[in-house]
Length: 114
Length: 120
Image (tube, rainbow over all chains, first blue to last red):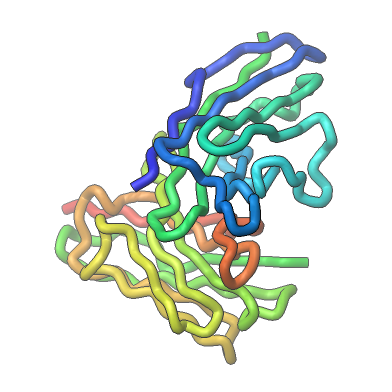
């Protein structure tokens, strides 16, 4: 099974500052046939279900603010919030969807306001 | 607007059974693979099971294989999870989630979840 490891477990960032979350997979999730990274990012606020932010490692879902961006390839990925807003306080998860299953999630990174 | 609404959760004794349902609307249900993902209280997300749009392929996490059965009724736009031989460690909020397509298992829409508590 592919193990997803996020770092840090939590971080506190001032409003308007950059937040960076890392995600490392235990094996590559880059599919050579189509050159796509099978990696997604989710945001989960307290008491709510997760929301998809980014898929294919860097494709933003429609309606997601452009301050959220994803990067990386192979085994190392990053979610960046360019200018943290109060409404971005949440737990963020990465997930691989490289076949075959199981499709696993990182342990989560809690983002708070400093 | 895509909507997913789970139901069927509740309190059940260890060894008992429960059937979860997910009612879908706002999209052509039969065209998408569907999934169950769970989250134990205060914990992270765990993928449980997936069923491809044609029901030709079904996948389970090892932790539920042989005990849980996923199914779908495209005529009713509904997804199901039959859970048998329940254990305390199955206690969680169970989310129904739509896959990005038949073959791309990122989860682009989620229901609000239904809570399953396994306790004597």
